[in-house]
Length: 450
Image 1 (cartoon, rainbow, N blue to C red):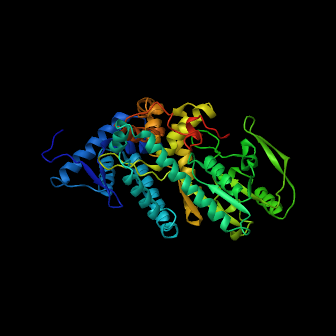
Image 2 (cartoon, helix red, strand yellow; image 1 turned 90 degrees about the vertical axis):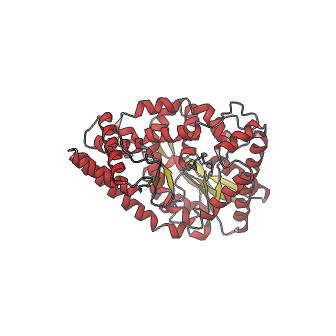
């Protein structure tokens, strides 16, 4: 099928940014809608995507740039025209749900402006530009010039300085602060950040004492399941929130409690096992994926809590301007860590990531506006290391999931990360990374005990 009009190269997003046109994204969206109503024909989805593209060529003026809405309108019209009414209905419903979700997030932007983090993002981008690592080609140039160790040192210093500044703010709010909450999405580096903050507090005569929130999981059969039958450990409702609050109040009142014990192998918990109390110079630590979730600490007054949030606020882009997504950065970290810590293959983590991400957007991101301090854990030097360990799995994932209607999220993530890392020089030698680096939390070789 040919057209006199030039091919579409760019698409206008809703936020005004231009991104590369990719017909495969149209095919995946159609295939995902078809799969939700029982379809399983990837070739048909690709055929329909070509019809959408042809219709766009016919309606667009030469050289025009269609918007996301233009393309979605054309998808709906094409599906109906070719008799795929059920798929069209599923696509329309999905589109409406996404619009409602965007509207809900928009109401939170004003509240979160100072924390998520337009100013912080700008600072990160400027730092990257100052160090020549804001693009894939820039990082490649640093490696080619033998300057990789210098980049590692600079990134480590920046991160260390940010964590130290956060700890200083905690100290400044003593003695009011009784609980420190260190929170962030999966694989953002909460554990290493907690250790480093603890080191600084120790210098001030204070000690962070963690309450192990994982012991408050309900028995496994009480957990909800996702559409694949996997138990959901990612939702805060899997935790006994009333018991957590009861114990927090008792601890701050100087009482001794006995926390439960949860056995992840059996999926069972036992009540009243681990005895715990707080001394005069001790601050209670909540190091949890859901530390910002209000119901977890609703029994404690706000002035007694200090909330530190950590996220991979990376600002590294390809030469054509596509930024690596923060969640993709964290997913790669977790793919490595799961392989040696949880005995999961990288593709298993990739396939499960949609569930992790869904929980983050529902239970973590909406509360970022409540935090007291924000730490950026993204390290531009980690990307060549992550590529060396994981890149080989991405083509396999793309091939495995392309024709699976229920795994289109995994397919598109693998494809997106593949295209991001493909032109990057990989690094097998991690000797320049210090033994107390946050990245060691994921790739191994750390002096810290996790």
